Structures are given as C-alpha cells and as structure tokens.
Amino acid sequence: MRRFSFALMAALLPCPAWAEDRAEQFDYYVLALSWSPAWCRAEGDRRDAAQCAAGRKTDFVIHGLWPQYERGWPQDCATAERDPSRRDSLAMAESMGSAGLAWYQWQKHGRCTGLSGPGYYARTRAAAAAVAVPDLFEDLPRDLKLPPAVIEDAFIEANPGLGRDAITVTCRAGALQEVRICLTRDLAPRDCAPDARQDCAARDVLMERVR
Image (cartoon, rainbow, N blue to C red; front, side, top):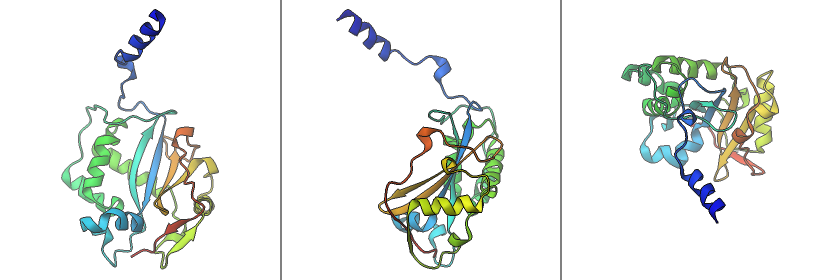
C-alpha cells in the first residue's frame, strides 16, 4: 500500500519547469491545408464567412503551420517576439480565410516558433508556397468521392520528394477535412512522427465542388 501511495503522490506532483513549452524548441512543422467547401458547409455558411461566398473559387486554405515535437507539440508559448499588427493579420485573410484565424494561429502556435508575428506569417506563406496543390483540385467544378489514398497520391505526384509518411488526410462526417504535410524547420518534406499521422479511415471521402 505504501509503495502505491508513493507512486500516486509522484504522479500528482507538478511537472518540472523544463517540461514547459518554450519558444523555438521544436523539431518540425505540420502544414495543415483545409478544404474550404467542406468547412463552409459545416461551419462557414452559418457565420456568413467571406471565403464561402459564391464566386470566390476558394479550394484549399491554410489552416495553420504548427510546430511539433517528435512526440506531441508545443502551444501557447511565452515569447518576447512582437505580435503581428492588425494589418499583418488582414493580409493573411486571402490565404487563411480570415484575419481572425491568422491571429488565433499566431497565439496558439506561432508564438512557439521563436519568430515574430510577421515572421511567422511569412514562414506560413513560404510553407504553403513550397507545396503544390494538384491541378485536379484547383477550382474543382463538381463533387468527387475519392479514397483518401488517392488524394495523397495526387499530392505526392505533384510534389517530388514528398513521401507517403510525410502526408496525412483527415476527414469529418464523410467529407475531406484537411491535407496535412510534414516539413522540416527549413520547409523540406519529411516523415511525420507517429502521433501526427491521423489518416482518415473512411473508404471514400467527399470533396465538394468549389463555389
């Protein structure tokens, strides 16, 4: 009984200071690209989100650029680097859908990169520019149902050097949610750590047409 009590007490003690998330201490990035039509149907339409307006032709948007550990990830880090300005966040709306999302991603993830707010936004744009979206998915004119592996194959074909373990496809309610791509700190493709591989288990996922 005493041995069990000691173990329980140890488990309840606060984590040591070195276990706290610290800015710039991470191993790699995950670039998350969200399929806008699915997000619009699930959430954006009821918010009257600008990216969901007819004629905008929005396909993939950047959900975020997330620093990762080889196991787990940091978030909400303290940093001495300056926040992005309102103008900086507004400038991200075209690629991320909204200035509000850009600001949220900076607060939760960007502050852990060791970059300033404008620097994090620039790194996010550079990461997205380093990944080619397959021509098939740009301005998609009609709904498609595809196996998640086919979506991965299309990205791998469009991006030489991107391996099967460097990309994962997520889904929600039978529809494509995101394509996530793992990148080194220099924005080169690399394998995702096991906990970042969250492949959709559905046989097929719906890719709704671009509006």
